[in-house]
Every structure is written in structure tokens, then in C-alpha cells.
Amino acid sequence: MIALIDYGAGNLTSVKKALAAIGADVIVPSQPDELAPAHGVIVPGVGHFGATRALEGAWTEAILQRIGEGRPLLGICLGMQWLFEGSDEAPDVPGLGILGGRCYRLGTVPIGGVRLPPSREASAFAEATADRRSLGGGGQPDHVKIPHVGWNSLAIEREAPIVDGIPSGSQMYFTHSYVAPVTSDTVAVAEHGEQFAAVVQHGQIAGVQFHPEKSG
Image: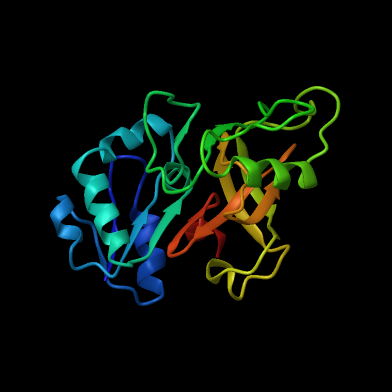
């Protein structure tokens, strides 16, 4: 049984249909204690990071309890960003904090430097970013449109269960303006004026910036 969290950020219908198509038994719990029987949890979402404020308190505690029991957690789009410590989109709203670093708007990474997360992933982020990014000049190219909407390819950086059977170069559907930093938890990156984390995994916790329910 998969628990699909509805916190008012986007339409869950397409995600429910995609899960039903692969034979998954899905529940949409109305209370945090209804997560107890779930074998896994999915946090979807589109829109503003501030919407995740609805997950503070009892929902966060229930999700962390499920994680502590070894159950998998998947964040989709905004749900993936929530796995991190927070986002510049809503600086006063904390993320789940399982993954180190803060999310930021595309095009705002300092040129000639790196955007260091405030916690344990700082050194890994610096090394990964130095290897992957050489922006030069100033800011986003003029032709790069934000929000990033449409199909884009994944560049798989390391093996992880979340990308089993997905070849590097696969096309996925994105719609977002904010991105997660590239850290040691990054499994795959995509590029839209700059590289950003498109798939992450840390133990049984995973996230995808794209929409798998729309990507086929």
C-alpha cells in the first residue's frame, strides 16, 4: 500500500492514475496516523514551496516515523525539494531536512563560485559543482526561459535503485523554477542554463524533480 500525501499543492489525480496503472494500492490519508499501514510514502506537489508549511508538525513527525521504520519515501517535483533543508522561495518554511542543502531559483547560483549548503553536504556539494559547472560570464543565457517547462534529458551520475532500468539520456517532463543543489545524494542531473539535481537518493529516501506520471 502506497500513501500519497495531499497537502493542497497540485492535483493528485495523474499520480494516482499512474500508480494504479502499475497495480499499486494507493491511499490518500486524511490524518497523519493513517500513514501507519503504508508500505511507502509519496509526497508529490507543484507550485510554491510555502505550500509545504501544511506538512509541518504531525505530518512531518509521521513521515519521519515511517522513514525510521525503513519504509521508502519518494518526493516528486516540489515534494523532492521538500526533502532538503529549505528553499529560497519561502525562506521561513523549513524542509524535511533529510538531504543537505537549500533549493534556489534557476540562474541564481553565484558565478565563479558555488552555493554552499549550510550543513553536512557542503564539501561534497563544492566538489561536485566544481567538477560539473563552468558557467563563466554572468547569469543565465538570454535564451533560457524560466520556469523550465517541457522535456529534458537526464544525465545519470551514479548507480542507484531509483534509476534502475532508466538509461542516461532518457527524456523526462519538467515544470519548475527552483532547483535542488547537486550534492553527494545526486543520482542524475539535468541542464537548463546550468546543471541541477534531477534525481536524488539517500538510503530509502528518493526524489525526482521531473514528473514521472507525465513522463511515460
